Image: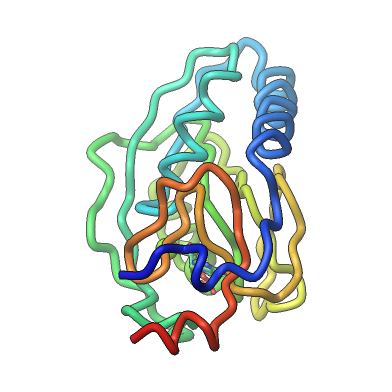
Length: 185
Ligand code: IMP
Ligand code: MG
């Protein structure tokens, strides 16, 4: 694997901007769910950093659970259509206020399948909170209640998002220069 300095195009969202926006989202969610219990469902693996920082700013009671889905192989673009559940929830979501926490919505195919599947389990409510939204790439409509940042159609990494499973630990969101990245192999 390469040092990210070899292929980063630019830092799109700095650590401080992430912190500030995530705090704002947590406060908004806290106001909206005042008096209710939240079940935050993190979509693995990209949503892990976001979930753990976000829930620190949530005041109402909040439980967490994890769901693994795969639509991407090692490639960069969504293999449109079917997503596979690689890890299911261990909690029942029936009559719970479910908040899906996602790293990024691109085509929307992954989340559309997840939402459809979760709706069949009869939650009391179901909302989506995504850190990043690539609006221009949307193929299916996703009702997004909470969004951190709308970003251009660029491949990004860091803060939970990976390049071939690495770099999730970086504290910022960077843009990949794909030519440089691929030249490194
Ligand atoms: P969608 O089904 O096309 O909306 O893809 C959503 C999933 O693709 C996200 O949960 C991410 O895991 C992954 N993804 C989409 N765009 C990017 C990106 O720019 N960097 C890293 N992962 C991405
Ligand atoms: Mg992913």
